Length: 125
Image (cartoon, rainbow, N blue to C red; front, side, top):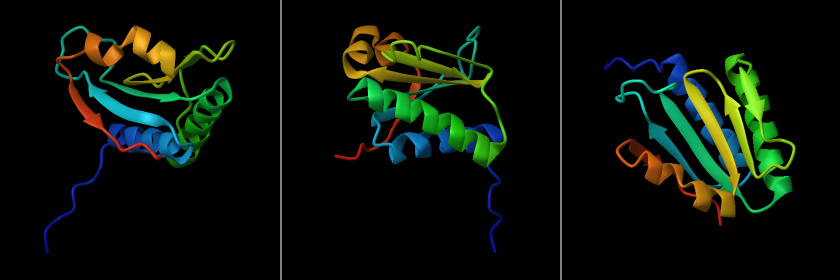
């Protein structure tokens, strides 16, 4: 019987974030793997967007709740809740970006980090 590979704490964290996003019907969730770049402040970005301020806030709240429940981790820093156009949740090696759609298009982090390995997930309709 082959051995199952044990997931790293970082893989569990990222999986928890993506699951929380998709549970709240986040649009176009992606993981940008930054671990191969020298001098980056983190190993990965997890990015998505919502269709309204309310949805962006709900996604962010759910991410924090699910990560705490599944991993026991608290975020290091969070910002953007004042207007919820771009909420950032910092877990150290993994940084979560939750945008309203127009802000995601404007800042275009995927293009800014175009050399990063990108993992895309299907969005719910």
